Image (tube, rainbow, N blue to C red; front, side, top):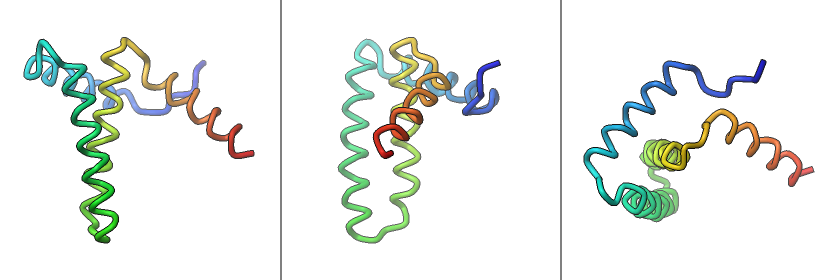
Length: 93
């Protein structure tokens, strides 16, 4: 049995967000996601530089956008994150 990273309820809510996002941002959904990811990264940098605790919320938004991008590519969030965790651990050893 594969190790679950995120619980099923969260993944269902994320899929719902992704579906709503696709409807709102069609036909250029992927490009919109990439633009929003870039915008959030810049905003997070500014907030952190100003010691603004709102950076945590914006970082959460960035996480959601990145997960949406994985779904946009028909990827599995759990298997992708599992692979990334192992890659980070290997690189840091």
